[in-house]
Image (cartoon, rainbow, N blue to C red):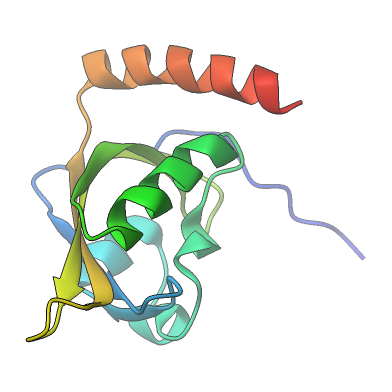
Length: 137
């Protein structure tokens, strides 16, 4: 049986704002059309899946730990994330994640908006993430 190896090739997109929503555990409950187009998944393939379905293996665990600490504490998180499309290509996004709160100010889920990251920000962030990955080994 042939094993499909993801290709490490950058995917670029222009002008789309990617929106997704998750529950408290990070399970996808909503993905806009742009999210589907950029990730290469159909909405039906994303609903009910963990958001980590698009996580690129180059992303340091520490970056996500800090993100989860921030958003579960009810705060907004901003940062650059390298994601992997269904076809194995990757894309960088400038991400903002906001907690969704109920009438009593309890966090009930999260909504994220993403746009294509700038080359300058990608280069700076990649250096930081490479150092973080080295410490995780």
